[in-house]
Length: 320
Image (cartoon, rainbow, N blue to C red; front, side, top):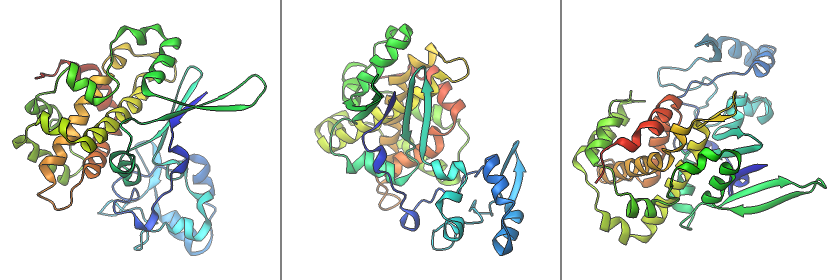
């Protein structure tokens, strides 16, 4: 059984048209099979490959320059490995990014990270529905593959069938419902917690500092229909994405403390993204809701320990 966003199979990398390449600013690990293949390259590319591989943090990876650029990222934004050898030669992390995968019991979940501008653009502006639609793929007894559209709430129901503990918490499945029934977090509380986390870069610190002087206008949010729809989609995306942080793949057990905090975590970070947006849109010129979501993702989404800590504790943060 597989659950994925309904736009999962549509994804296509923007390559040289991407303004925020994933080939810069990240550690690019090399899996063992790709490493063996790379070390057998010959000629000019083989020489460069051998010079570009290092071992750190118990992983083989590519050496990056002072700007954090992969040595095979060309000036035109294209990948030298793809140009010379084809897409099949990419290491696992490069081939799969920005996709994520996790399993719980007999369910596989697939999605994307919002650090990719293709995905942050799609969720914040290209999709027009209030809710993200998901697809459930399942194989019947006769071997035929079936598909049906399901909601975030239905995904939660599937989790409950596999672990009764999932049903002990009462969740909101849209941002609009959350703020109507559970309220907003205090802006200063959001800043206080998030500013204690080590910044991914100086730009994040500057963007984050600007939210100290911003406050929520709940009526403005509610009256702006496209904005509320976008915030609903961001909230549901974060809710779905954070499920993976609640399941231990080794024990196949659920961390109840993490799971019960999912809608608080989703709301907290949706509000953080909104604050980043309103605080920076008039300062940096052209800073969009998509930019705020993408920057949040780079700082928070891929920091698994941070996500788990927030899932367990963010519900205790002061609220209005």
